[in-house]
Length: 496
Image (cartoon, rainbow, N blue to C red; front, side):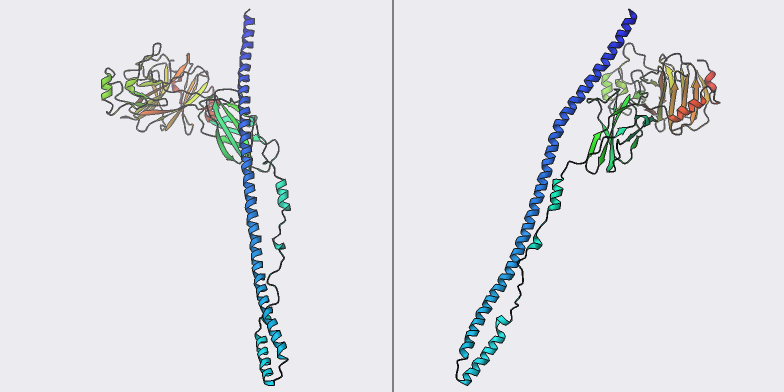
């Protein structure tokens, strides 16, 4: 009976997963169908606009060339009309002179004849007919303004849609996720020398498998990628997975997206637990700051309103004097000299990493882990259920690893940022210089229950960085040191 129930439960789980996949696929198809309608209308509109522009250019060219022909016609007509008018006038004058000369032949008086002959000679010398150029200033040839659009016609007849690149193919086996960076590698299914660049799009998601049409996050893009791989760096892995897709672009158009791929980007994400932090700590999600006025005026709401202008006034987002007590079933708030705040997420197994940076002039702080049953008066490093490194910049500077009320001085500079590596299964807690990955100290123990990140701060503040993978340098060091006791691990033998 039990085995049948287990088998049925597995079948139910399989069917539920398949139903979810089908819902997602149906949403994808519906989205694509709607996109086809919208995009088809858009390309038709773009096509009409392009043809209207082409028609407009042709009309403008036709008008311009017609005007050129008319101007040439007017010029030649003007030149020839002037010559025609001058020639007509010259002919009339020549005919009149010829008639006068013929009459002169009939003159019998020698003196009158000589006078007429001299007059005729003078008029012939000045006659327009003998001063005219007998060559037309223009011809009737207009072939220099003829056109041959055979090549243009061939171009127009060859109008086609833009050549679109094919969709790239992402090489999943060559993609890498390491050190909060993701390298995506792809290739073209066929070589295309006309590709100008690529566009990479990505988004974070908590859903495994194919990307969903309706996801809580939007696609982000990286444009103008010249190679067939790209590395996204400095990412915060605050989601379980990331979707990726690529498209190729030539000078004319962008092609289809590649088939999307989903890569796992799990990391340890947590914030500060404000519900149980000490009242003198002003806590935001990823920062905690000492507040000497914290907790004052809790007995009077009126006083709290009157003191809004005083120094130490809580920030607008969250005020230490407005915190509500821990909910029933939660832990007590830290008090006394235990200026402590815990992380809001416990570590039950696996390897995890986070980083902490002290604000400038912070006088005292501790960074480490603790069991969840840490007492409200307990201080980090002074019990057998807390492990930390402690920095003191007040009166006498010190840098030490602390556990079970014992301390080991660390003879090295305090780094600007401290990296914390916790391997719960392997029983190891390591502290690193977050920049250089220099090992600061290692605790080796056997954790008997889940732990939570733990912090103490006095007269200063801390900022927290989570969503980080275990750095590859730390992983390599841990593998090299696995099973070996370091000289800086003298606290390992302390009572647990």
